[in-house]
Image (tube, rainbow, N blue to C red; front, top):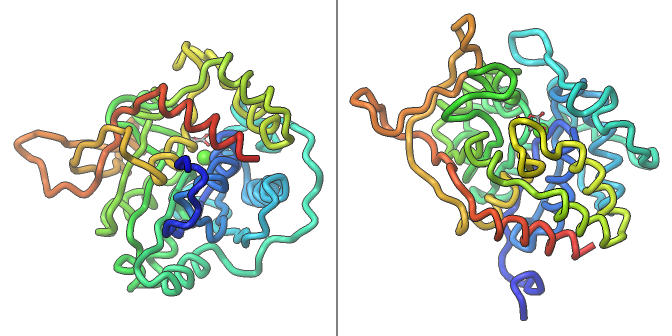
Length: 314
Ligand code: BDR
Ligand code: CA
C-alpha cells in the first residue's frame, strides 16, 4: 500500500486561514487530498482581495473540491491600518477571472476567530492552523480568547522572509499587510513554523510540470493549472511558478523533506521603509530565545512529485 492509499492513520486536524487568491486556491486543492491532514474548516481574511471576494472564492473553490466544511469569514481589514490588496497578481476578483460556478452554499455565521476557538477546544490541544494570508484573524482570535494560545498545537505560516521581500525590499505581502497582527502571533508562544520566501521561491513547479498536472484532465487539475501557470517564469523565479501557500500545506503534512532552523523572529512595525520586515536572528550575540522554526529549503523534486501525486487523487 502506498503512502497516499493509507487513510487510516490518525490525521492532523487543521484549519486553513486564507485569502484566495491563486496560490491559496492551489493550497486548498492540495490540502483536501493530503492523507495526513483532516481539514476541519476554512477561514477567510482580507488580503489579496477584499474579504467578500476571498470568502466568495473560498466557497467556489470548496465546491470545486467537493467539500462542505465551514467557510468562516474573518477580518475585513488589518488591525490598525488601511487594507492593501494584490489585484495585479490575482486579478480584481482574486482568481484572475477564471470562470467557476457560483457557490450553492453561503458562508458560515461563525466568525473566523470564534470558529478557531471552538475547534481548538473540540480538538483538545491537537489543532494546527495553516495560515496563508495576513495574520489578522489569528491576532483577533488571540485577543478575543486569552486562553487560546495554549490550545493550539502549531501554526504553519506562509509569510515573511529572512532575506528580502516581494512587496518591498524588506517585506513579504502577508506580513506587510498586517504587521501588528503578525507581531502578535510571533509573540504568542504558540509553536510556529515559518515558510517564508526563503523556501517558497524554491518550492516551484516548472511550466512542463504544470502542463502534466493540467493533462490529468479533471476540473480540479485544470483549476490548479489555471491559477498556477500565470505565475510562471517571472523575474523572481525564472525556473517556474513558486507555490507559496502550497509550500506551507505540504510542510504541515510532511516536513521530512524540508530544511528547518530554529531562530528568533520579530516583525518591524514602526520603521518607515522596513514595515513588515521579519527580523530574523539565527546566530547574533543579541539572539533572544528562539520562537520559530524557520523553513529554509526543500527537496524540490520531491515537492513537485508530491504535488502531482496529490492532484492525481481527484
Ligand atoms: C503571499 O502573498 C499572497 O499574494 C499569496 O497568496 C501568498 O500568500 C506570497 O507573498
Ligand atoms: Ca495567500
